[in-house]
Length: 375
Image (cartoon, rainbow, N blue to C red; front, side, top):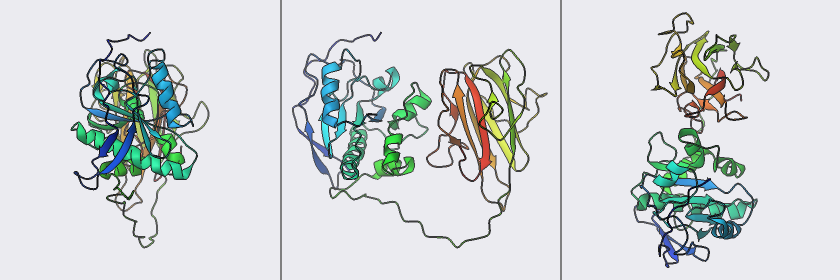
């Protein structure tokens, strides 16, 4: 049951033009904001936000933005869900909630810290997506600048522009938007972060386009096969059998469904790996560089009896060899599917920097060492 809050009074602006501050005030692009579906003076939450994040959403359904705005306006109280802006229908902006006041978009922490949350309506049309994307990116960027929030997307800092996936991975929830939808139109996480950082000019061109890579002369590769062996220790139980690399069956991951773990052991036959765990009782523990199940102080990560809810690792490639990373992913006792794939400690653009979910016991883990993701 959601606790309803005192309603706001007279907080919806009557102005219909929003200026995108694309590049320190230069190349500003004026866009019309449709207020037809904005919450009235007797609707919405009266709680002001702290100005720490701007949240990027995607609607999750292929429907016009105006339909989403109508729905949020009509059901904001009964459904307990609405945001400040919805972008779509060829680059249009629909206002629903009031800026600077809490919306119901991504959980209590996110709602309390986000003066602006923005939904991107989904379309199958490439031409419509392009217009929507430019408006969405510029609105995210200009909103952050307006409230003194960094324009970095999904950084490790607690201030900045955050995807709903970041909120899920770092705070609470099970949403992964907007990345799945962006990827369907060819936009990677790295491209999205770049575009938001620099914005688009009034002509729709990227202010600082990503340079086209210059092809490097081909060189013989010196890639070595790296096997990784690892195991979990069940909380209150014993060590599970070692797992080498990963597979699709019950022998293809460390741990067991719905069982919490308290110790982790990882070793590689070539190169070196360091790893650490986050426990619900202690937070992040020190990095471990060895692998010895009998040494529960320096040979394994974790504390006996303390529940692991996060894992991070980093593989070091021997000098002169093709650079490889530790790719890994996890499940929790509260989720049916694997969370996002991680690559080392976030060194590879587009991949998460640690596996798990704060507050949810981690029950399964898969690891693979390679120069690309095999999951």
